[in-house]
Length: 290
Length: 332
Image (tube, rainbow over all chains, first blue to last red; front, side, top):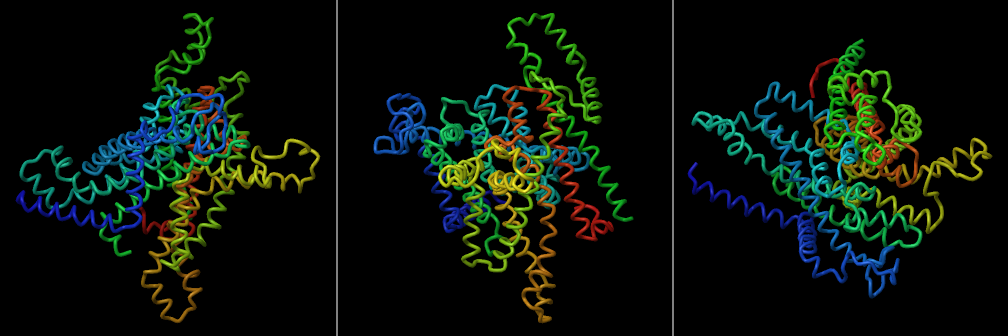
């Protein structure tokens, strides 16, 4: 394989892939949602009409109005501003937690798939056992002993969510390790580490990216559920989950506190899921015909 | 006989998984920084180092880890999970035992709801692939996947509980006058209280299961024996419900088994929202109070329930598919 033709075919494949992604309406709308969310999170100080933490006792629990588009909470804080700043939390949690899960899952899955035999048995047994725990129970049990800081939460969500990736990567490695190009690399004297990381892994990247994208939505949902239960991101830091706790406490008098943060979560998770499904279709030639 | 042997093998295979579950539960609790005793002791200003040492000895925390694990495992097998740290100091298993039936009831009801609704939805969507119905359900599934369950619960409470005042929004039964109701009205009262929790816990499963049914059905409809059945001139109804659906349902049994941890995990959320005294609520209050024996007991019991649920699903699969129990397909 000469470097030049390799680069050329890679560029062509990338072009086909982008075209595929843009022509898929689901993926396209997912991409638009995710892009807007990134912008909102980055430009939060510019976009937010008020400081999200400033208490205003003269305007407590006000319904949406021209002054406060999405109303105010029980401390008179502006909901729209809190919603905008909350997007930073969900973005951070989504990416860091999934990053951890993907890294752990990829390494363990690669080890299991590449070495096979008892390494495989051991790791896959471990995966089976981890899957017996309803993840929220496991997460809650660990969090009970930690400070409920956002970093701990991201770490715990990541460390309890790697099993799917591990299975996926293992399956990819099992089917790839017997291929000719791996044999060629071995004959030319490449070390195991080199074969795993620079020969096999690049060929398994596509499904990993798809599952990571779909995982971001799941991680955001988990964080919001934990924050809602009071064991996630702690107030006064605004997160969509702990805003909903406020909504639940004032359910009978302030409906806007329950509606909008949930809507924000729904749209965000929908965005990542649409993008993930679109990526899967674009990356999998068999799926295109269906 | 075949079935018995198969069942015995399955049961044996559960033993290492069970031991794994106990090891993980045990180490989760002991690897966490700051051992449970210190959490309790730190809040007590009168705690002297000697007292702390005595408490540690009382709970066996001064022994090496494998001794502690052995002791705990021995207790676990006899359903002795220690005593709660909370002021009532009740046995952990008693606390869990009285809450299990409610959680199991709601999860079983929502599973029944999932099967009754999601299977027909999936079949119709597959039979009318790319129709308006198919597209609408696809969109709904995407939304149901992305909506946080606790938010849906809040919206339902807001609409059916507060706006329309049709359904109660918390607890398992009416507080006032429940004792004086006759049996029929008691059941009715329970039913009314269970509608929202069961629906909320079923949403995710409804979305997932209708999707799986659809793709499983599409897979089967493409196969040769369906073409044969049609070519024989069988009516389309018979082809779809007798020939296709039966085969499409097989993989779904496994998926139902795999969805059990998610269902049980969901109980934390809907039980704390609807104030239902189940295992999930117990877990939540144990986390809030850092009640370490209850946490550990809950974690193990829930994992074992998942394990048993998977075994049930496996048995269902074997009962439905003779190839499994006669051993023609031993693995996967």
